[in-house]
Image 1 (cartoon, rainbow, N blue to C red):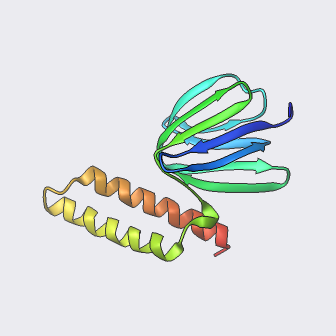
Image 2: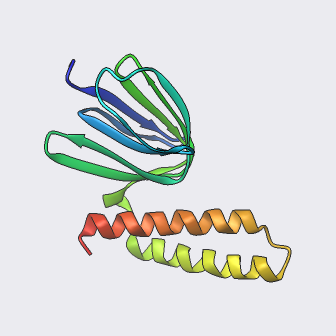
Image 3: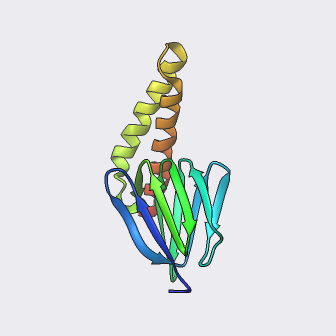
Length: 138
């Protein structure tokens, strides 16, 4: 196991991933970072972004929507507000979510609707669409 690092991704609803991997790449508020086996301890805040991990020659990706990452003792623990594997994303549902978010964002500019929530919803929808398309090869 010395050449692997344990990846745990957990949301309030469910555990998403628990696997020994070769590499983890995530998006923090400071930018993208990578973790290899025997990485130094780290604690960081995550932002909406793609989390990638590799096992052998197989790479997986998922949408992670905020949370925290801790690296310690050859283990990466992701406590995410929400996380969804790219291959599990429903492309049609993500497209509808993007359309709703764009409408709310347009309304937020004209009214007193919560602009930040609308903007976050749009970013989430765009991330899910990107990863779903990538996973389906479109």
